[in-house]
Image 1: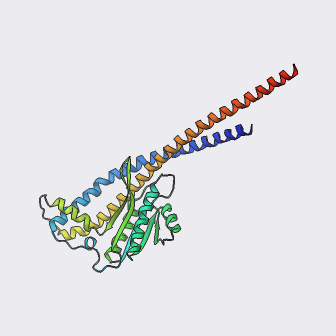
Image 2: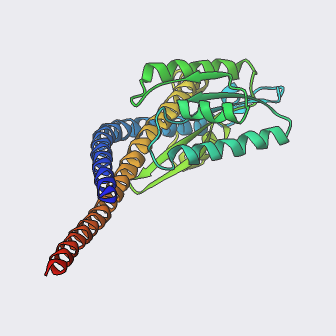
Length: 291
């Protein structure tokens, strides 16, 4: 009887877990739908800004700009921003990002380059505090990153990089490629040298334009905008990836709970049948003893 009671309690507990994971799956699905719409809406704009920068750089020829060429004297210091989640239950989302981040941190330590580490999300904070890596600043932008907040953060990065505080500013985030594929990326936010050169090669085969005002004045506005849109797109991709990976993880957890519940019901029925059989045998044996 004790075994049957224990199995019944486990069936109830697993059923409760199944309902919770199913609810979390539905919430993640709704958030994913909203997040992917925002990411897709912002992507054409950020790509167009990059294309326009490439065309201006190609027309200007040999351009000298602090956001492209970097500081004149190397300060031997880099900034690394890690975009993680505030909550768990999202599969390998945080694991991949933190592993990629730790590789970069160890690489910089081995090269004797000073590091300023900034985090977005509680999971990265907990991980690097456990690793005893000092965190310069902690950010929290939630499931729906606001462009104004990202704009202020990117502007601060632009100002500090222009002042020669860092050799490079990089971002580790989860890039959303498709519903079936998300990859951790180490993106070089600043300097923009590599990105500008690639765009310039593409634009070189196109028609040349005369720009008014000068290309240098245009780049003074476009290059900070490129940094801001790239950082905002990274946060949007991270938000989409987090929700879809949580949706998949909760779907898998719901299916596993369903399988466990079926197995427990099978054991319960067997234990109950064995108990009934034992009671029948006792009754039959008792009746036979009285004859």
